[in-house]
Length: 350
Image 1 (tube, rainbow, N blue to C red):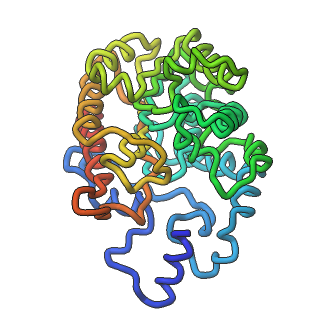
Image 2 (tube, one colour):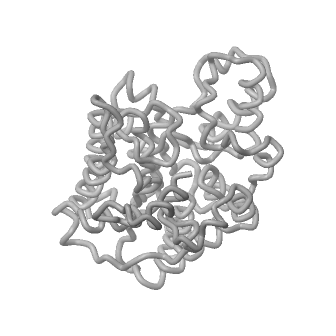
Image 3 (cartoon, rainbow, N blue to C red):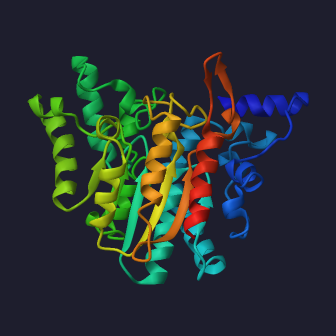
């Protein structure tokens, strides 16, 4: 585990400098000019050190899968999300909240704060390699089918986020509380966002046409879940659509259809996983290239106007340990470039 290796390096005094402890530390010290003069760095929401990207030596005994499982199922992610909500309400409003962090479930807290404070319709645009709105049980049952049949229509890599190999199926089935892979489900379930005001861009786990030809209840349930949200007005712009049709028309059309004048944008850096980005927590799909991500960003931010403004934003799921890593002679992590481009464009619309 990468956290154990960091603790060992600490003990040996082999920590490379500068030693940014988390994504906030890196990006707050490397802000693009367009945003640096418009934002106030308000600090961090406190979380237990063993959950942080670079823990303390005294945390070594807590870095176990059992500890993580207990944390999630005891409502730990919701506790932290509520701290984010309270922090935003106390320290940010009436300003525009911006968050740089790791676990995507913290976005739940920012959305909770905005909907509680502003009392008006809010749009939510999520850029992500996975749709974090699928109930864990549906994803697990689809993974079961894929394991049993070795179906080429359902790549098993799609499930490495929600079905970690070190967990047994029984343990995974228990992951029902708020966490990084289902926070959008809770946002919708608790009616913080109307489904018709949700736009999801760049996901690789959107059901392909091949799903419709599979006669198995586990596949049908997964497919029908997406269809039910689309009937309610949710806009899915999957990775395959971006590659085939480009970003400009589809994103502009989706944003124009929102029943909201303010939009929150949440970026999961794994939208570029294994393509332009390697410094993300879940390298489970072949994501978008840097040029494709730039096109998505430009199409998205070009849609802002007097009639559509930015309510808040976040940049999540960055793995600080791998930031800028050289994978081989032809692959270098570009997470910092993606993140800085995103922040630069944010700075131009706030």
